[in-house]
Image (tube, rainbow, N blue to C red; front, side, top):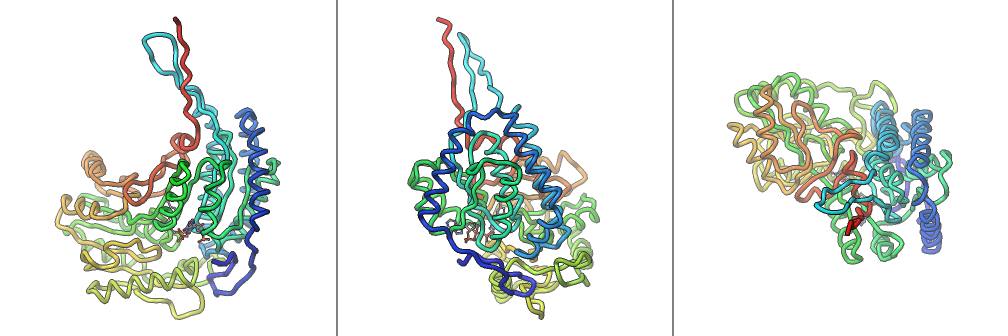
Length: 456
Ligand code: NAP
């Protein structure tokens, strides 16, 4: 895959970049390793000054950086700005809380003393996706840099300018060369880099295929890995839900970022008592939206991230419809230049159809009418994915009971799934393993070292 900016609004190439040579990669790993030897002993307070500076630069340069996101992957400009804010808050969160998270954890023992001390481990290699090009990186960079590790990032090939900008922001914030390194690399090179003993941990956010390939390389070299992979999140609406609130959340949850979020509410599952009413309101909210340039503030439907992404969704929808599903809204490419696809609702989806089993990474809601709560849970769990999900009910005890039966890493009650710095994020089943964000996120790549003191 070429490393290049192609504006998905018109599919025109803007800029392309050369992949790093093997010598450049070696020189960058050597620099990162040298910096790590110093950074690992820098007091947490000093590390937090760096991240607070990064956050403040992000906020100051928000407009310019948001435009870069929109240019490279087509996100609506207001949502790109919101991403920069969110990203800044991730750096601030770890800058402010890491000292507490990294405190020694005493262990109660019958004799003497024991505690766990968190110590850094080295260079962490992060492979990141384009859908939140600044925020996904922050989720790995912030906790690890605070923990005393250093980071090398191989970003998605379609967001090279965002990738460079992040490295440049660290430089502007005064980070020593090697604390944060951008790597222009093609994916097949990852397996080779994984063999390098100076790289001690690997994290990937992306598809199952990429995750499995990274996990294989990590496993072969006995390295810890974290995988944040795809999802097909269930969005369950029970008969006692606040209907308008549920519809509003379904629209945002499924169509935010043009449906290109791992935790998008991809499967809308509504009990039959209110299903028709829900569908009517849902469709109404998605009709007549303004299609256009994602840089314009009044645009409501922008392009997908790339022409390939739009083609893939077209294929998935066509195959599902050919197998018998119905299109209630949309269902095709928008007849204009650029990577556009109509906001779509599919119904009558059955096991065996593409939309039933695969993740659709775009503006397509799979709508299911089920008999009752029991059927909703069974359908929700009939998936190889296990990332997030939502339950809507005004009876919170009931919603918690349903939530506890759903096989995912996260469940949101009466709201669509979203990431926040203080809440752990991650999945189970084929959605990956490990956690980002919150206290759990900083624990992934540290040595939890036992220190035992005898009193004998
Ligand atoms: P992708 O193709 O897997 O790409 C993600 C990253 O992995 C990119 O940097 C890509 O580089 C790299 N990559 C691709 N194949 C690889 C391989 N064989 N070995 C090592 N690295 C490889 O995924 P995407 O289509 O960009 O992103 C969408 C997917 O990410 C969806 O499934 C979505 O659900 C998931 N996602 C998950 C989360 C989460 O937190 N769970 C968050 C966001 C997205 P190139 O660009 O150079 O190919």
